[in-house]
Image (cartoon, rainbow, N blue to C red; front, side):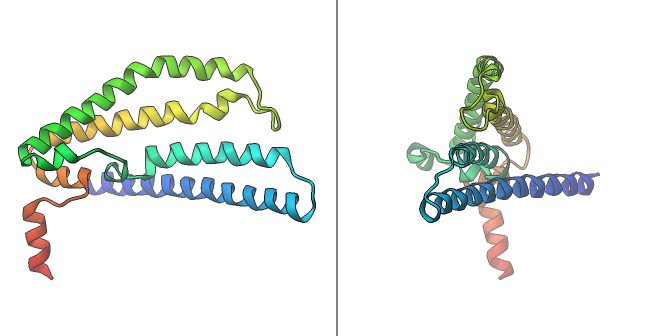
Amino acid sequence: MRTTFTRIARWAQEGADLVSATLFALVFVGFVIQVGSRYLFRNPLGWSSEAIMIAFMWAFFWAAAFSVPLRGHISLDIVYNALGEQGRRWASVVQLLAISVVFVLALPATIDYVTFMIRIPTSALELPFGYVFACFPMFMIAIVVRSFARAIGLMLPGWRGRLGAIRGTEAPEEAAAQKAAT
């Protein structure tokens, strides 16, 4: 059962990474088209600038939600690093739950705004802005699920390894085992 879940999770992660890479490739291709049309043909294209902005916004929020590990996100850890192991554990739990609560509280207004913006089209591509901004509620939901799951994981046995995975550091016993293996 665990290997099936692990296999599905790995497949989903690879799929999310592929979407992220595709979105960033679209940004690059759009940028090349825009530069070429502007400087080689002296005829700038309005739609390519808009497409680049939309693709970049989707790439940014998609990658932050599904591809970038939590330890890759920006964090202020001046106080965190001064705490002991238990202090870091509970500081992480509080932080993860606070992020979840704030995003859950902001989600209804965000969804309301996105659904309101579906009436207004973009200027060049004439896409409804609701579709353009739909990546943000998805980002919020993914962060809530990931943060809540990590917070729960830190309250269960085996939390030391999970704490290292969140902050990009290994648990002392994992570091010792890895050092002994080399």
